[in-house]
Amino acid sequence: MPSPWDELQKSRPCVLTSDQDWAPEWAIVALLEFAKSLDLPLHVFRTNPSPALDAAVIAGTITHGWHPNFRPQSSHGATHAEVISSMLKIAGATLYARTHEFAESSSAVAALSDAGVRFLSQLPTMCEPWIAPIRHSTGIYYLPVFWEDDVWLGRYQISSPSVMEREISLPGLKILNVHAAHIGLNTPSMDYYDSRRPQFFDPVVSGPSLRHSDRGTEDLVRELVRTLRLVGAQFTTFPLLCQTVDEATSLWKENI
Image 1 (tube, rainbow, N blue to C red):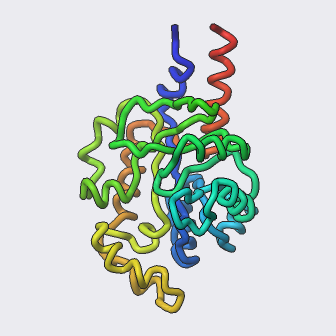
Image 2 (image 1 turned 90 degrees about the vertical axis):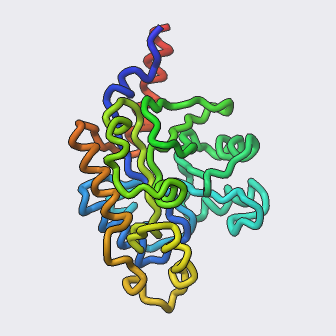
Image 3 (image 1 turned 180 degrees about the vertical axis):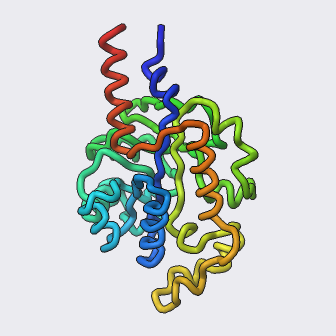
């Protein structure tokens, strides 16, 4: 019996996403300009109010969803209900979410489902090929992440996409995730980010003065996008990807 994801995987759909993570406005502007320079649609998972992001959503240049923090001592709230309430105030009702630091529990996912979330971009992989959507017990679709910037900068310290050419060329979902902080700082390593983290969130410090002037995250992501395009991968919006997932499931059910 064919999988509902057969055609979806063959098309190698790519999406550029970003975690806001309370980044200052200058870094948000850098993120928006970066996506524009790549001529890519961008989906931002929101943690807090941002005039620049609100304006981009209204203008239709980005789409957005929730980035709730369910961890202890969360500024979003002490209970699941409080976290959901914070998200509604920041970004309104949505179908899309990714939890902060990918932290979750069955009760947190159930709370998201009850709040109307239907697509959750969880599970950072080591550039896993053949990625397909996963249906959670709540009915939410899990869309795993193919590549995440801080995983590569920190745990693996890999500076070039050439080491994953095989994974890039193989079928499967290709959700990329960058952080506004790493684009704003052009982070070359997690040590660099950690050393500048206090100043990064200081509203008095000039953002550009913290930016790495040599090869960093921006260069790595540009090379990754270029490599994906060379192998024929197609970039799309996160909502359109989710719509495709929904339609593939409905079509599959009709034919079984």
